[in-house]
Image (cartoon, rainbow, N blue to C red; front, side):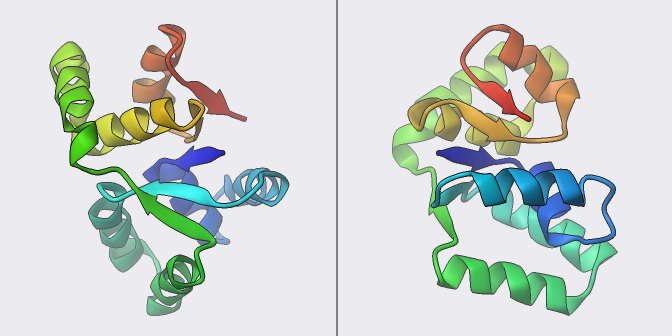
Length: 132
């Protein structure tokens, strides 16, 4: 199972993104469902609305509706999210990335992201693995 960060999901949805071929190949090879932490939704919608078209947002919503992507993360993840935000305060990890990490840790640890600044630090500590 794979958990998607905003950067990985946006690359998959945006054919003009330089990482689109990589994200598409990875998700095609991965068994479904692909997990999307609920905290990613606002950030992703912001990027789509600012940088893409309504058709891209509609494609994503259709993928949620058909459960190609499944929303994950709940109140049971909050203690771990808080711990991660505090632990990586100097890195300014933030809510969204901490939620992705918490959800990934609970689901095998694999994360599709192109954000190596934040996720690379956490991956070196061994709780998650960045895909590719």
